[in-house]
Length: 272
Image (tube, rainbow, N blue to C red; front, side, top):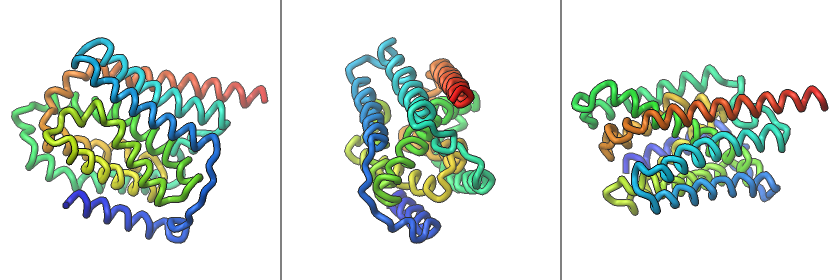
């Protein structure tokens, strides 16, 4: 109930901030719309395929950190935006506009979650080292994947096709699907977790919609949200921390991929 109310409040605030634009509905599907939805479904299919492999297996690690995080979180969104759409970082929500406000609000929102994490999670028994590693895994690798794919790539283009409210709701649904083979198997009640993740998705997408700047979500707000899930609700921080080396490899690969695509994009603009 608390999560539902928080998500509803975030949605209402987003609609108030967006004002008239929030209640504009349209039907303007383009090939870009189908590409982003298809990429979201690809992340879902890859996540579901993780259920076929044992935890810790090479195939599972490659799919999770290579195909999902690097390919769906960096290569496809940034490659399509820069080389196909001929867009810029702003088209992936990496923009200068309202960056300071976004960062400040993100810190404030994350601060509201800190008491819940401290009181609900047995952090003392886990240890600072494991907590730091788990935070990097969840927010460094997983966070960049989620903010690039679901905020910068999917949300902005679905909004152009359908409007603000459909973008928030549809992106939240796609966000739930990608957890099929990752978080849902760790939950005591997967069916209830689907509902929970949907409202988490609504909250995140509503907050993002306020400024449509990635700094509103990443890193602070996202970090607080996932730490509540894994430190308080699921209690798998120690397990997640063991994936630290793979997260480092994924983040490094994502950074190199984006840098290479930006270099290619810059070169194509100079020769155009």
